[in-house]
Length: 590
Image (cartoon, rainbow, N blue to C red; front, side):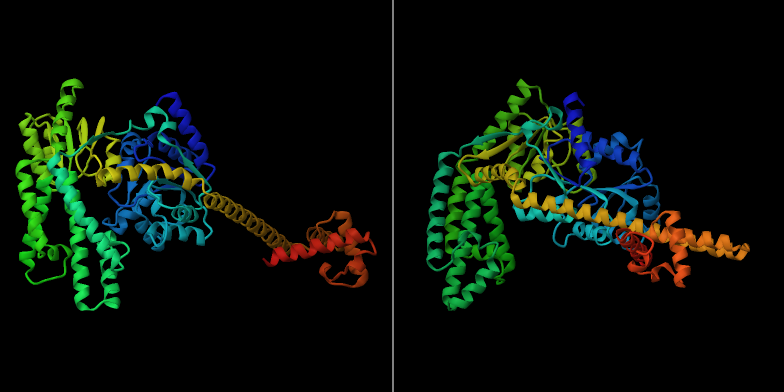
């Protein structure tokens, strides 16, 4: 860690130990310098207590793997899983210093009394954006807050909130009092990897003409549906049940069937166009062939949007055009991919490649293309298996040059290339923590490119949401809540102290009465000390009050009035003494 990184981590640490903090960082930020300082601080400050790392999923420990690897010899980590027996979990709770656990399991084990909220000094939520609504993370925090147990909390949000309301709820649930947000340009060098390199590829003329024709169908169908009262025709796929219900209210049976057919065709036109743009005609053809096969298998079942489309006359027309297109053209991204790989091998001496794509047809095309340029490749199985491990080992030992997969995992690859999955940005950003070079192939003037720019614009809006007035007000409200509860806790402790003192004095008097024969002088002294405590006055004043009680023939100091005390003290002092007596009585009763 260089000096700038160390200074930066110290600054963040200074915030985390004082405030409940929300860290809003890009996904590729290296948290290890910050986490190492943070966890060591709480272990030194409260060594008898535990640190809880709250994970969204039991297996999602990737963010902490490197940290655990470095510090496992110094700190006892325990990963708690629901598959473990109760005895095993109890043992891990007892021995573990830092607990990695899901919120649902921790909540359940607290209710089982296997561990208590008081055992924790600090809770770190690795995916804090989920701490809202009825999520287990939010329910876990309710247990702490309802029992007035204020544990220090911190949460990590990796720029995925969509609105001010969403962020405000997260801050409310975690009692966040400070938000740390930094953009990539403000981060020290080793805390983040360089941004990705986007490679824009225009489609060729035959594919452009096909997409142009399909787009004409899309516009015509949109106009038709809007004229019939369907205001958001492109959203029908997500809202199809509501769409059908609305048709039943307004149209007869024949009109309903026409509108449903048009909506289904529109949705599939959009899908086919996007597949051609992003992946090429062979992928779109494969999609339509699966629709035909599914239609034949389902026979008369008319429940699926896709099978309904396979039964329409226009389906055969488009299928025929795509078949011809796939015979004469392929996506230019294939050639651009080959160019990137050859350039990386020859100019920068990068040897191992990880290519990520959707659709089986694309995976097979990629394998053929790599073979054409002299690279050995293998498809990576999605599920954990011996074959998968063998493939990864072959890449590491350079027995093969590339692996092709539909998903991302950590590998020994020198270069990661995302071929046609711009919507998988969560996976994509994670990849930048583990690779030296990342390329993202995007089709020019396509839905791919629109998705990419939409994502980048959301990143820009993060700062505006954080600085919104509602968020600032929420942070101030949380500060007030914590302050008020802290004062209330201190007052409760003082009340208990006064009650304990009163009980102690009472026991002392009882003990002395049993063991000692008091003279009249001794009794007067004890009476005066009791008056001194209750009236919060000097011993000399207590003697005067004791004499007044004897003169008035009263049994207790609480029976004196202000007028009677004013006979021996100024009235202002008499009022103070009466108020002190009332205050002591209230404390004792509390």
